[in-house]
Image (cartoon, rainbow, N blue to C red; front, side, top):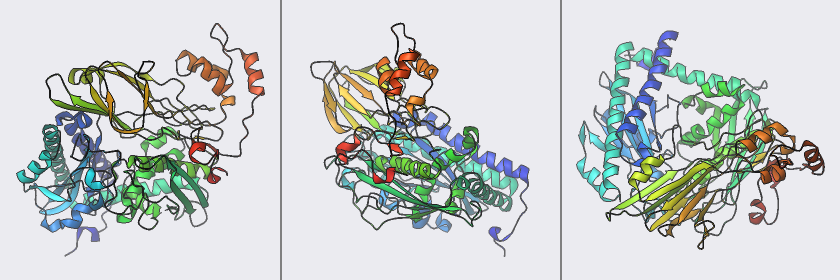
Length: 621
């Protein structure tokens, strides 16, 4: 008997469009269902979760967002042992094949059946409020072991043929400080994925397994073809090296924790045929004592390759074209990963802590952008840092414990054709928590939420601005922060300047004013005190002295830069009536020099950690 994969079925282009559109619709429907039925603010309001659809070969078919992997489930539970109604669950970082970065990311996976066989998977994973561990929120900034970070669950059958495993659910909720929201979130995710599996099963019933699986193959093959022809072809064959750094790990004193990529582009000689990228992470720093490690070296780096691939879309001919390009399993044949031996930031050894692994995986997005920028004369965006966790916890007026945690975005980097965007979030559709909801649920008042003036890196194209948020506490509480880029700013490129770093100040301009470390678990805040949070601005692109006066004047009018910032960052003199004094500005600009042998600007914080050096050796072309 022939297996479905043995037959070559001609794919009807109309059916292909229907299948591809159905996959995207199912993914969106699953995410919508979770958002509407979950209970925790992190899932329901901040939308820090995502869904994905995979085929029976464990290949990711959808590309609207990144997702976890099915590999750990299939590794522990053979496909022929699965039954309709099964729901699998895991969050164990070291047993996730690289798909889970830290323990608060909980993952549910549902198999899809057709004629009694597993034909696909629907999966959802997201960041939950609390899964136990040393501190509320399960992200202890000074953890030295994963055992301090919460409950580890290897792949288990959470629902068995439609029957929930009540014992497992009791264990998980018992270990959470927020058991009700955890239980509700899991119920929402399981139910949504089961719904998605029914929808996908209907697609197989309508068109047959052979046709649908041929469509899956065609979708992935098209991604491979398009990325190779439209994106990789822009990178000249050759080898390029760059690195960037995390600044602290919560345990040791701040220092440079390097993440290095040696990128080699190869092809048959024309830049397109057989084109692929080899990413070698040799030179990455040893694993940290604290929780900034990321387990990347599993399943040949499958998750990390799909995490990094969206950066390549910046090479598209236009931003509109870039937005059309999904990242699915079709990118895997184009990216070969080479990891250093065990014991580095990307190859940590169990039980190294990982809860702040965003410091590494976010930085790697920038390292790939930077190394590609060296290859294409800077035609890539400057740096951005768009995830950091801040929050408060304590007891409300009724004496009940609460936990508010938020993922505030930051500015994106300037581009060779436009300024960066303000206050973006790297997780698709994620958002800050609505003020009205926050004030009705937790004992504080949001006094202001706006743009952090002057935070975007100066450049011909300015970096996007970060947030400035002011929260006044109504009761004593504790403030928490898991953030990077408080010392090392988002870098500028090709003459652009670095953006402003992350900063938290409690009681600004008050008698007890104090700067809070970016890694903090329990900073005391008194009732009446204000917490001021300023998130990172994106790096600038190009020489800021070449920014047209009318664009500087526009930024002044919009409140994105100050009069002082216009003078110091752009060499623009503002007259007493608020207009640009062009003659004075020409003289001021003429007195300045923009020459530097470095292709990147890392900002004023870099020399303090680099022994006085203003740039790294790899910063020079």
